[in-house]
Image 1 (cartoon, rainbow, N blue to C red):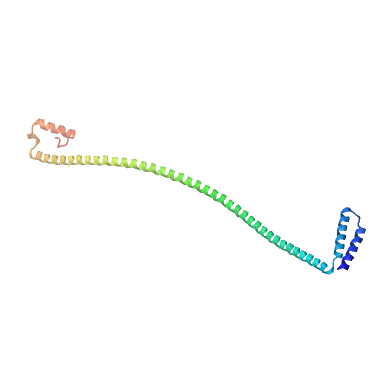
Image 2: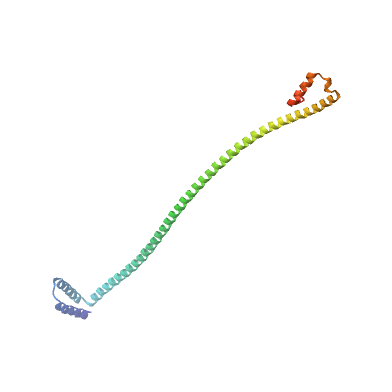
Length: 206
């Protein structure tokens, strides 16, 4: 190891001599030379312990790096999943919003349809009420006409009865006249009978 470190130190010095000098390069070269001299002055157990510590630190750093990479990958996957869920939620929200708008339009149309149906029913009710009122008027007139018809019918019955009675009385009178001729009656009575016959006065009134 000491030989390798010496060879590396010599190679670094050669490279440093070939490269253009600068303050930063000079500082880095001096720090590297100091480090090489410091390592070169160490014994083999110390160098082994130093290398072991360095390997342990490097392995720890590598393990932490891989752990960070895996953690970042899991986080990336989680973020990707969340992004997919967010996109799905956005899609769902858009779908629900469209459904809400469609349902509102349907409800508006349904309300308008119901309003038109209600107006139509109101018009039908008004028409039926008018028809009912007209029918009630006609029924009242029919009842009035029926009453008048009944009164007229009763009057006609009475007149018919009177005419029948007059016919019966006339027949009885004629039979009486056949039995007792008018020549035997006074002249005034005969003249009155002729006048009543000409005027059409019923026998009952005579």
